[in-house]
Length: 206
Image (cartoon, rainbow, N blue to C red):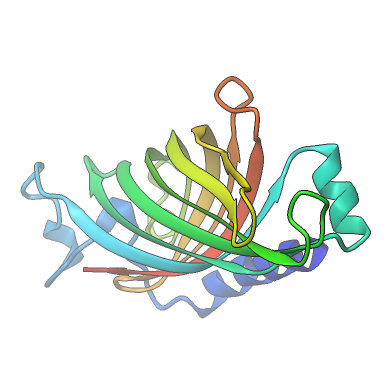
């Protein structure tokens, strides 16, 4: 996990340095000059993001099994589509998938898959700061995800669906191109199979 955090930190530090004029939500533009992007206030900006995905379950058994090698998580992937409305509100639908190697009593010598679909709303929270808000776009969000954990062998299936909260940052490195880092965690009021995820991805305006 420390390596993942270090990688995310490095990306967030380097991206603004490499920037050549971004196109964040405050001045997104599909075609032409960014200055007239919101002449039509009802216009939405759509984008797609593909990224690497790391997840962990928030219970003692998971961490103990991970420490002794009974559970070995692999890097997963996530894919999402979103539309930005009213400059600061982003509606997003995403899919995630992560594999695990298991040697536990319930599922010996097999592989498990944790996957699901999530839908939610993101709110860009940085006030207008000129070119800065055109490049760095932090956001917070919430929504609901339908997900489950299943093993290839045996009758091992469990539902992990529930509400979630998240926070992230989009860094617009070129017009229409952005790098995103995001942390998401399910809420204890909605599921007894709590988990958290860290994802890093690349997005493009469509």
